[in-house]
Length: 70
Image (tube, rainbow, N blue to C red; front, side):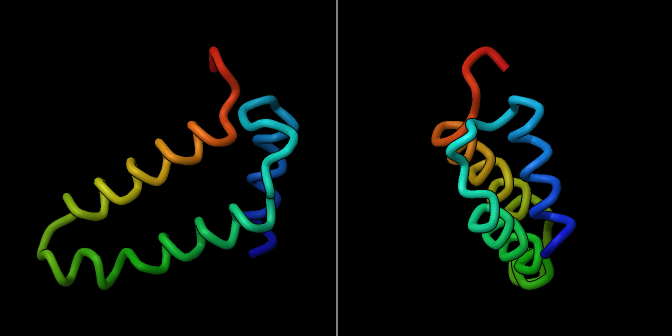
């Protein structure tokens, strides 16, 4: 958890995410989707669903906390 949270805080510091980004909460959610990769790929027998999940999650995070023009 600490490494993921530190990475989110670094993204905030570098201006990739807004200062109001809830770093701990976002880190917890990132860990949850990372931990779901095994059952996601096993259930669908491919990486496509996992890729869709990750890209969808990225879209939401950028829309909510991303910096315009980055």
